[in-house]
Amino acid sequence: MRIVFAGTPPFAAAALNALADAGHDIVLVLTQPDRPAGRGMKLAPSAVKQAALARGLPLVQPASLRTAEGEAVLHAADADVMVVAAYGLILPQAVLDLPRLGCLNIHASLLPRWRGAAPIQRAILAGDPETGITIMQMDAGLDTGAMLSKTVVPILETDTAASLHDTLAAAGAAAIVAALANYPARVPQAQDDAQATYAAKLSKEEARLDWRRPADALARAVRAYNPAPGAWTLLDGVPLKIWSAQVVAGSGAPNAHERSHEAGTVLRAEADRLLVACGSGALALQEIQPAGGKRMTAAAFLAGRPLPAGTRFGT
Image (cartoon, rainbow, N blue to C red; front, side, top):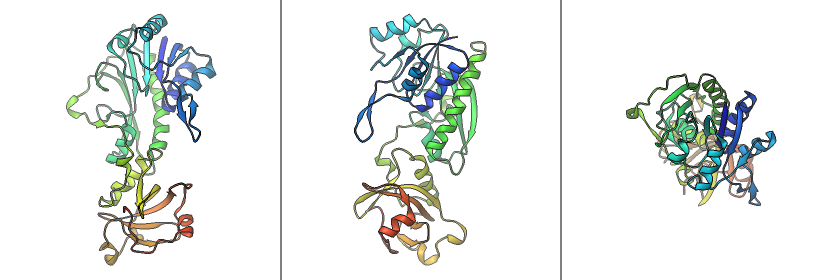
């Protein structure tokens, strides 16, 4: 099958490689223009660009598809289908109409739950027990198209956004290959719009921990914002990132005296963790990164800066 592929990050690169390995004819690859990255802010190619170049696939990097030139390139590709995965650019209706068999999207949730930009993180934040991959036909709406298949993926209690991303990338790559094996014979299923939820784009400000929230919600936030934008709090007015944390349970739970402390108060330091009071329960911080420093264990952090009981986070 002649395929135009559009995608940008590693999630998409996994699908591109799977389609090529399955023997499909990738006639054109679209990815976003190179962006500044790293400490030197040098222009860096996307993961999809790197995969396309490694395979010698035709590649273009338009800043927009809302131009006559962009449409002309796609028209010349003469594709049977266009596969889209985390591309990052809106496809206008004129582009959606170009492939003979339409456009398919690899979406990292079980639609109609978590339509939008950050489905992986929103699923973790909400405490969902599972998520998955949906292969859908694209239309002009935001992740509203009819669905060809769903692949369920459990969310582990240890999953961060990074680990769940990798699991879903592999699942998405397999799912799109399977979907194309009998496409367009498969009958798509319409989404139930009444069940839709929206996965809004993440912001650095929302990743600031609100210690008044329950400990389990804060633990999910730490996992959901790892690796980006990174959960954080303030310590003496200076940002401090929290990379790993667990809800205090069992014998390590705070006693009645400790529970009386205000949310965000350090309860006690232990050998390998720092216990902090929350709106309900307590959170054990395990991996921390001070401003301008490296990620380190709580023990290493405390060795350089002891935090006595009663120290307040968030201010």
